[in-house]
Length: 222
Ligand SMILES: C[S@@+](CC[C@H](N)C(=O)[O-])C[C@H]1O[C@@H](n2cnc3c(N)ncnc32)[C@H](O)[C@@H]1O
Image 1: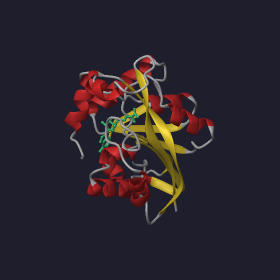
Image 2 (image 1 turned 90 degrees about the horizontal axis):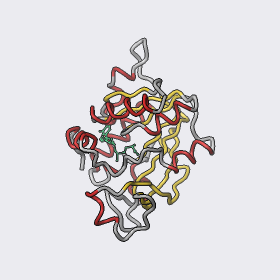
Image 3 (image 1 turned 180 degrees about the horizontal axis):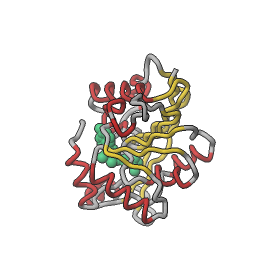
């Protein structure tokens, strides 16, 4: 299901988002350590901004975008609090990346990204095939040839919470114009908020955090 910005705004405004964990996802940190982040980087659905902040701090050229004005406000504040005031965030619909004036080149051309790090956005469109196709077309329009999209998405292989998807949804979504290079089971770290407490009760918890089952996919733009 696709949701309006107000739905996401309320999660940030009321501090109820289980994905706001105050640190980058370990799986994304691992990608960087393995050398998979290069060139211009896009963080669609940037949320609280942890990945854009962490990568900016390491010297990468990163743009964090989110549909939710509250998320962008939260991320900008978070960046300042973490001493990474140079982290850039803008309100942009990831379904229309090539139309975003804030991402356009100075000459009006569309910017191309070499690395796109999708942490828990793709799965939001998991049960909405049209939105998913629109999202993949939107990514294709701004991903440089040879560039890579990394998708960290909640998996339906175990009980959990949030929009969980099967690996076939990822495989089928990135067809012509893409090469699926790798798809592995992974973990997505969440915090146990009241809204997910019941679902998380049976899971192993550490300091109010749970590592739920996920997929990590690496997809190359041909
Ligand atoms: C589950 S959160 C993940 C946030 C962050 N990437 C993380 O892993 O912590 C999904 C984020 O995607 C944003 N989002 C939802 N639909 C979007 C869209 N069409 N375009 C851009 N961002 C969107 C939401 O506002 C939310 O911040």
